[in-house]
Image (cartoon, rainbow, N blue to C red):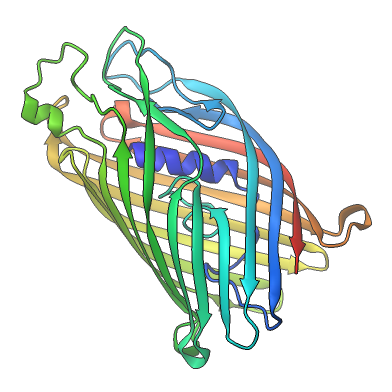
Length: 345
């Protein structure tokens, strides 16, 4: 549950997306430098019993009064800073880039914190564009050492992740796109179930560990209805193969993106549904955990505001709610954000 909450906060804080319809952007014909910078801020609320904070924002209560309660609401303010700098080689269809992004390349996404990517894109003509990148956590993220400690201040610890991403866009000249992401998640000081008086055995404590491996496979289709409307339906399989068997889970995610363009306006929206289940009973609650998640976002862009060339003003709203069969793992996040996006080439 914690990785979904972390990723959602990062994505909400960066709901000022670039408006790309597909994960792999087109490689420019001209050689040289290109990129963008997006600066903004978001404000909203969060509910989480598992997450302590991300970047400058505190996102959870130090104390919980019971293990059967849903999380309290917490107000949040998050800065938004996104960038990409890329260099395209002359006549080779090759581009190197450095960026910070969420896994869905600047769209609202559930399955990663904000990451720094260093990668290469290659256009293989009729085969498609292949994007390979190495990724690592870009923001300091804190979780509770033992989230199940009751009526005492819970200490926090850092959570990091690193891994690789491979995306194949415009497969064989078609609108299909395939993506695979693999990450290793690490918790600096994992003490789940150890600090309280739960009476768990060593084996049961190990089953609550939150570090481990994560894999995600996506398939999407970009349907350009006309010059103004584009729909991108997608399906993904998610596998959290974590060290703690009770925290490990897998399942499917369904999503639908829509892009609308008219004159200087562009509106990008997304809705999704995710269903994840665990195969082993949680030793605290004596049942297997499952969670259904729904959410979405809408971001509007207005090009050349106040006559500023290469700039776009943007504003977004995003919301996410995760409903678990165990109330302690419920979570929700909502954010309204504004920003300015600058592109250069």
